[in-house]
Image (tube, rainbow, N blue to C red; front, top):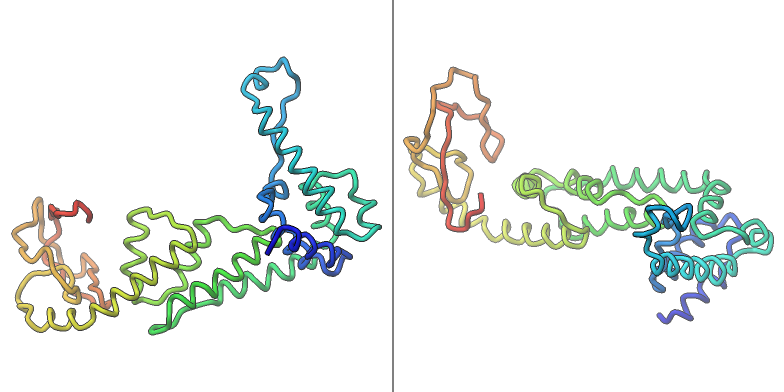
Length: 274
């Protein structure tokens, strides 16, 4: 869709009050296309005087661009898409100030929608056997809708919400994701989960074969694991015996097993990844 068509979108659906959330969503679409959406949520820091210390490092070109973008957003897009009465109320305001004032006018409407969207996100859970791709896309929808009405969740929060909605079959993915401190956008997380789902579904037959030929007397950390890398208890260093029920050790299927010794086990993997 061209920039002209997008601008017509908000001009044809002028802000009257009750349609505030729809108007704001359309406005953000247009400003995003023009690459100036940031002026709604950002106030450029200024310096008090030209002879201050801060002025020497002040980015005057960036500030001028910010002012130009504010003019484009406020005059040509925001005010032109309001009713005459709302234009009179906001004609001397910048984009950020204008948006904050509109929020105060229609805050109850925003709060209701925000509440409903958050409830939808928190209730969203993937059942075992369900498709993770569609599930994540379903959660991304209300997350992005929240951002469009001014409630932008932090990336780590949205990631936690999605990971917390997954069933136990994704437990290994979640543990590795958190232990490695992985950072990912929502689309990247979506692709990573799809890849994990695909790899685990392909590995089911191999897991059964491995378990059937495994020596039940071998010492292993997890008897439900497809391949074992520490099957020799003598590999433990600085170890000591533990008493009954001193250590609560669980394997991959959640079953409790007896722990005989605890200590340090050094692994040198070719990939250097643990």
